[in-house]
Image (cartoon, rainbow, N blue to C red):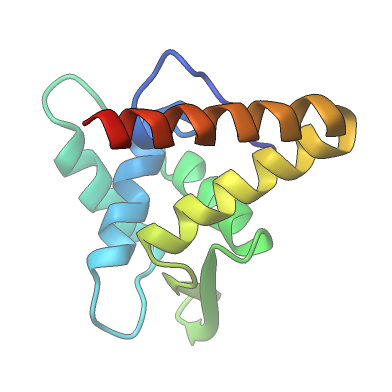
Length: 134
């Protein structure tokens, strides 16, 4: 899934929509043997609150994209209608945040290597000065 970052937003909202964040939180909190798209879909729509909902197709597309990016794992199982996937965490929340940072920084370094490294150094230097002055 291509990552589009919105620096004006906070937290995971910088790169995900509200229903995508809810879907990942539901899977991250699951301690069982994975969840079906229906279980994630129902949980997301319950958590989104009054007046908000998302289609099951949107959930399935998002979950499959996260599997393609190795953020989520899945197992296929036989069911009444054929085969279905059970989704489980591949990366936990911390691992996902590192993945996002890695993808974004990797892309910037590829296109703007000198400027990106200089910006990282400047940001780290400023953070160090701020920590020292305290």
